[in-house]
Length: 295
Image 1: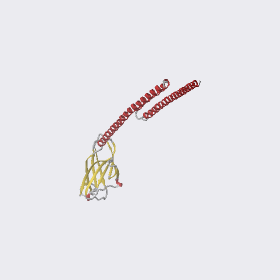
Image 2 (image 1 turned 180 degrees about the vertical axis):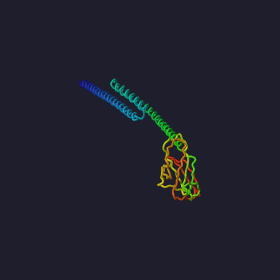
Image 3 (image 1 turned 90 degrees about the vertical axis):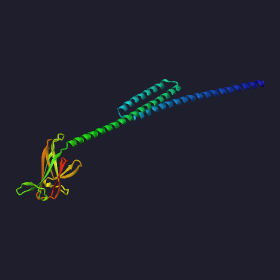
Image 4 (image 1 turned 45 degrees about the vertical axis):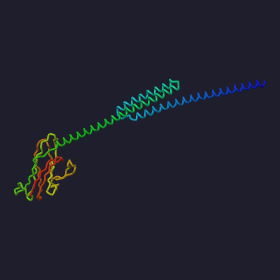
């Protein structure tokens, strides 16, 4: 009896151990299944987050160049359309694929394709930026050339339209008792200066009112003049500085040769021995000069 009892106990112990082992196996298998399922879910969540992040970053990275030019905006419009298609594709994939492992693989592939798409568009954007920079430089160079040509042309026109004076003569005269004047080259006998010249024909110049300025310069470099007799100052065009003049005269220029004389006479004025210079300016632009020596 005792031997049979022992055998029964052994059998019970073995059955108990087998039961415990089986329960442990089931528990472990269940835990492994739960962990595997959790890992799949975590992996799936990570894949979705990675794709959403990549899409958002790609949108931001590409669209920062919007407004650069029409070609760039057209390219970005196509890029945004492509990204929208990926969004739709991923949304359908999440709904249709029930196998989590397969879904993770497909999402990983989609992520890779989105990154490739981003890189392709960044390459195109880089090329467009380089082309636009070169185009701007070319336009700038062209504008500079056009501007320079325009300036040169304007300078040529301005130069060509300047009125020229020729045949400038200075006569120094003395007054006789009968109020008639005769030529003299003696400073002490000089009473007046007659300055005569011809304004040449110029078909390019504008016709109309012009102001002639005479500067009569004494041997000591001073301008002969008297405000009471019409002397004053004008702005010299080239230097944009103020210059004194002896006499001025307004004419109506008609693009033809015009002979003019300007006379300076100051009662009782005594002139020094030396060289006198007569300068003619038309509208502030120097035209001609002539010297005469009084003894």
